[in-house]
Image (cartoon, rainbow, N blue to C red; front, side, top):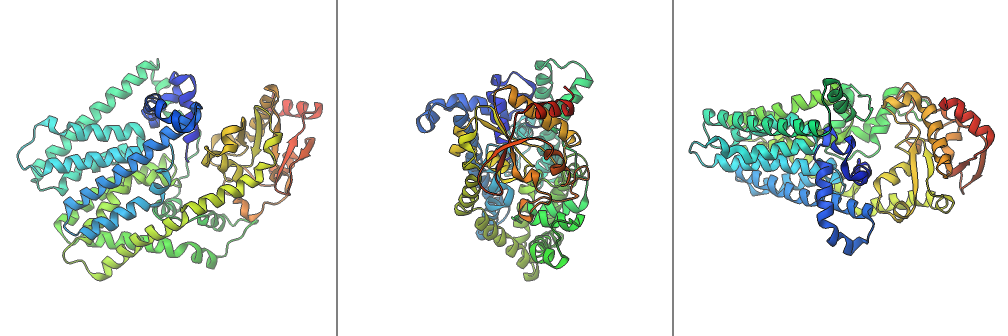
Length: 527
């Protein structure tokens, strides 16, 4: 579900009069969500009752789901306009719909899919204009520029592919001189729209100096320390298209030589190599096919213009390991595949890996994300926490190891489950791998426990904190972040008094509110 629960909290918090509401990276997503939430209240109230939180979650998910339908239709029509083979448009559009990141985020309340829809809408509008060979006035490109700007307002990384999107006019029938004019006018208007909005928001927030502007921009990173690794990028890029399950964990364990869960090279190849090899064979076949014609080379130029800046951004500024960062490349990758398959003299040896990869995307991702699999995952985690729920008070906190722990994923990924909707409890991940706060995890955990007690809540610990070694199925990777070792966890938490525990050896333990614990936590927190 990505950051859906954070968006919901920010929108409901004072209805938007704070910096988190105007987040630099998603500057219009929360305002749009709030607007549509208010407009849809009469309708959502009929189905889900009077809970603002539930109605807002439904509203955000509905925006993403509706956008995904429009997104696929736009891509289908764009492909049909660039070639004459109907089966190619159907196959590529189906693969686009079932691509890993797209299929996941269309069910969430995140802004990625609405932003992608705006990007494709702009490309579609430009190609509509290109069918008219007459010279176009400058304002004819304003609708496309507005769509591109809207994509950036919903998620900033779309800015890195806007030049490539504007160059989509190269796929039309215009002359090079006309195409250059289209690109320049579209980009110019898009930049002007963007500057107007961002300057307006900066002034509206009362930010009047460069230092404050920089702090506002940096806050969009949420304290993440970026992973600058070509290996991580090379692995995560195909994972954005093909579901690899926990293969990423196994891959990291292999790279860092995890002593708790060693992964032999042969096992790694069996788990990941086939899918990744197929994806890169697909990429190679597309590139070779595009080089064989002038029209294909136009598409290749557009693809390179999109990929290079986004990859640089992912590698040096954002997180190369996040699959969502590659969503802006989707229109260009799938459109390139369609253009390659529609080349008149394409070799069967080139078309085979392209078709095979597209079919694999549909089959593998469809099987991995079918409803039965998700339901089983939800029930397995709910069973672990269900015994704990009756013991939770208002403002209680359940401390888990990190985001990989199933309870943390349950809280994040199933916000509409009755356990999450009806229970007034919070989940706190003690560790946030790759974040700045990991350096002070002991102090932060101590402060969070004291805060919960001061608000009348209890603190419950995952029993995993007390295990001397992690189980392989917990997805812990020793050495993934060198600032933390697993042994640090039992060494820290075993010093405190504990109370009752829930059922099972993988349950939860009450962090007892005793004089000894309060004194220790106060010393650690520095209060």
